[in-house]
Image (tube, rainbow, N blue to C red; front, side, top):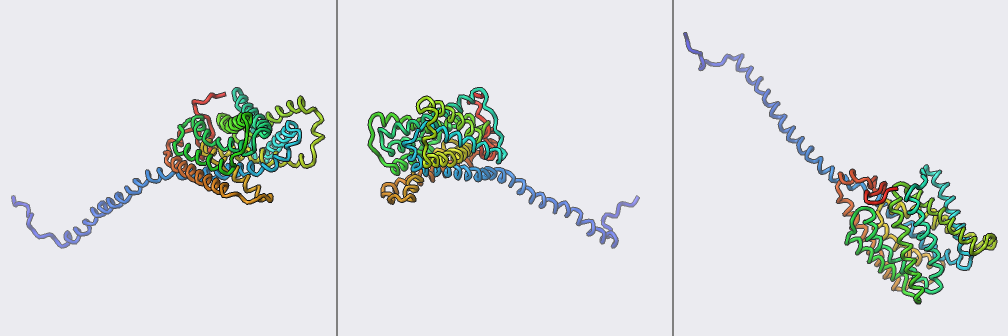
Length: 375
């Protein structure tokens, strides 16, 4: 049996077919580089995921804008508030908050904002805001002005950022940050320089302490109810509760017909305070607290004395003294330090943590931390 002719020359037809079959493996070989090029794209996915936290910058900017606008309204109202110094205060404040509540209800309906009734312990939070942050705060301002210069009361308000930087994060379910507390102290020092230091007595110091506590309560007591009611709901409920409290006190101490004694100038002041300083400023401020948190939003209270100084110049007052300019620069430095540091820490939070945390929704506080008492 003859052996296989393994060394026989290849026929021409087979030789020409071999090169045609050869490219077949090359297609598999070329598929490998494509797969290899696909892996960097897959590997790039985690990078895209880590870049996702940059999205909350827009809500943060909106929070800064609304908080700044609110403090400009408050600072610019200093001259207007002085108009009511000799008017029946309780009746004037009742009219102010009643008008603000009506305005808020109309605007909320036009904006399609849904308002809900408080329930359970929410009544205590909202009543606490109205009783301390609105009623007692205004009473302390008037009573304190009889024993202390306005600068003393202004410095008391300027101390609020440090308290919000410490207590605010605890109520929101996080820890106070050293950088945030430091920035708040810087803003406080700058605001104190802008306000200046005035003369006072013992009662003036006591009323200044009440002003300080009430101003802090206005923000801190709102944190547990912002999640369900939002800025509009908190503003509406606190204004009507404050209007009722002021009306009752006014009927007892000033009489039922005292509103007829208000002059045209008094009514104009009441309308301005109801619109700009209450209806508009309240919603803007609580929107800022919801977006930024109490700690970062508290820094923006340093804008109020700066706005008051600017309003004084616009109304024909003298130019700020060098010490006031220095205070404005210190406030700006504190705001830059606090907001920049907070933005870095905010961006460093993982995307998965934000998705799992019920308090985050486009940078807005929408639910309560589990450690807070639920209604």
